[in-house]
Image (tube, rainbow, N blue to C red):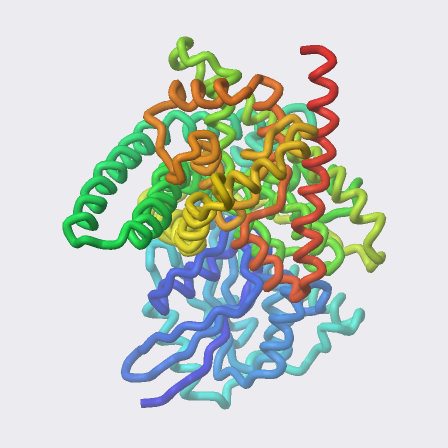
Length: 617
């Protein structure tokens, strides 16, 4: 049994990760946009008794080290002795893909070309002479359709044959220096010549014509932004409407289970202090996080993933690129910003796709301006209670979605404004270009996308939130039940914060809830209820009616709700996001700044809003 090291290289959006998954059985995911995979991903597979270690290199258009992806891919190919490189090419865009392929062949003697997406090429009316392509490159060329698992056995066989016979090298090996400008011109000419010999058009490309017609609408300056807002509105509406019933059912289930657990604790004669921490603290907090987070995430993430896999997200980046460019930021920041709507920690991690360090820092520091899935339920509850009349029936949900779109638009505006200020403040570096490929629209595999979204996103984010919510629940219970005189520590703290809270149009209970909600934003509403009821136990509410009555009894008005919406969106990110910022930047300074910037913005906006509204209300 022999062991071989294989590298997987190719342009973004050619199905490279799909080939990787099909060969190794892993579940790496690369979104349908440029530059999603930045780190190396490794897996293994066996074929005919031989073991292969497969390294998936970042998707890149060149090896000239203009970006982080290019530098990582170039270093891996130059510093590691791979037995074979699998070059994944899009059969429908052969000439463009050959640019990177020829650069790789210049430094890698042994390679196999995986001519992926061959089915789409046929749909475009293209015929690829893969035998002629193999003759010109002097490497095996295997037509494949990785999504349908077609051609993979032939690919594995070709890779094994190359690994077992290392004497045969490709026709471009060591003939050109791809970093040299003269060589680059020759390689571009070679790409055109090879494509001209190997590609024949049989009929008009109706699919591309359809894509161009759609793009005239979704990327137009007149209709692109309005269509994006409409789609966001539909997304929020489906999330708001669909999450209500499951959230209520989960809440009732956990409340019933809580009664049973409390009864078991009494039967076991468990000390009240211990049962209080475990049941009223840890369990109640966890149940709230699950009941509030799981339903909207189970709806939002799959819908977001479908948009992603269909190819719409790069169009949003295209529409927003000019706005970010005017602010000294990078167009890819829009993609990270959209990831932040689901989870700010994911959004911060996604900032790796931005090559320039300065622009990447701007994206990291502003990502928390987008309301994550932990804050969306708070916004939905406040909008439903104070600004959407429940008696309107289905129309109320449309009103909630419309207001959420307005809030989201304001968040984008704040992101752009703060990005402009940070761009002027941070040390200038060479501005990186934004090469964005608009991929063809594809019908996403619905079952696979929904399953992947639920397992890889919904449950992962939920598990991360639960991990920090459990110890937080114990701390919160202690704050509410340890007495200083006749008052609990929680009440003493809320009284201390109350004057500043009133100045911001809020109160001490709200500020304390925001501070204690640092581990998980989902606990803010339960903490507010605990503070107002002063019973030392986080309490669920049967519906928005009961919550509205409690809030209005404690002095809430529409102005309070507006300020609460502002501070919900504009305050320090949760602990998970802060840890992610620390990991990504490697700096405590930038982590603290990522907390300070949104908090200062929120304090200023709340103070101004509350004082202006007092003049008119």
